[in-house]
Image (tube, rainbow, N blue to C red):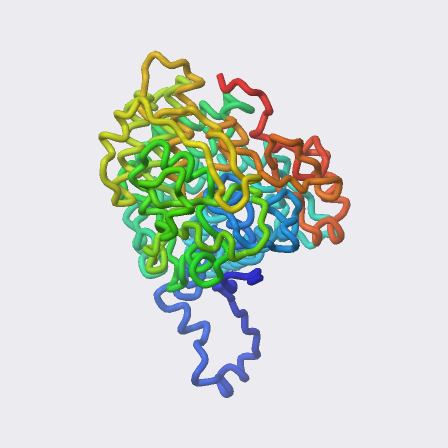
Length: 522
């Protein structure tokens, strides 16, 4: 197995020499710090790598929440078909990406910005830290943040509730700095996402605040409401148009899911997406996935040639399911991936409206706008008919190679909005459509599923959870990733403290802060 998809992209070399050595022995082929300082290169050059490493790749995404949420799944019998996808943890590396490729280089950027009197670069780096660690805490729970960089023998973890308070305070500071410097253009050559536009980064700040507020809406409703309303009231605005979408450059690399599909044959369409997209007649399916050529694979829906793999699938020979649907070939030439879209913001506002937050607008209008924005973003047609469909529902999943993986439809949701529905059913529609729109940025779908129970998806076919990493009862779903072994053995007392803060054992069955376990969402 190819465990590492891409190498870390950014290294900052600090060269320490005497004055005389520098003046007489400088390598003419080496870029000096003095040259790097020109046009802010020394402090600005790491940013494309910081942004790129907001995401994981195969072992952090595809073999984790891509699979758990049924966006993708593997045809490969990794480690005897007992692995992350079947709830036995073999790979756990997003922690290393965040600390090695975001937190560490950003620490150096912040110091360089201070040393060179370029404070807005430090502000930008701090925003990227919040973007990154707010993802990491959604995977593990307590993480190291306020104590990051400590040289103490024990580096304590932040409690989750404290983390979110810190995130909101830091977003306040970032937005204040950006608001006072809207015309600053020093980021331009280092910013593949927005070409240095401070007003567009301000929209990211507000959109991130709204995302985190909605994340806390059940566990801390007062804080969530205050922060969500603050995000929606800020004059800088939110990401509301596809032209403002936060896209992260792939820096010339192949989109990870395409490489895993086409070069390694290690991932294919997930069965939950087959169930929803075919059943609901979703026009985005051809933008996400490639059709199959063997008609026997899709005999259960013979006019729609797609076939997925069940989450936690029973896999025997890899060749059995390699013919199932790959991702669309378009991903092989993609140059960016979606980090935050106008569609997500519309669905966040739709949920906020259901919860009665000021400034959210109308739930139905936001819901329908979210679907329309997603269709437009992916270049799909037929959105009006899709939104009007009040009868189509998800289909059962049939695995033509192994009936143990087949399952009845997990949801009976339809697409068309019905004002007479109760808020719980309206929320299910919102989160289901948000799920369908968030392809290739699937961590947020896993967050939504744990905090709301939506969308209604199948449980794993093969459940290998046990006492080693925690037991997930049959018909239930994984709740988190355990802390990494390096922390368990090298920062043992701090991990014990984190377990106390988390209120449950360090295993995959312990709920995170935002996941209250309460069935009702209102």
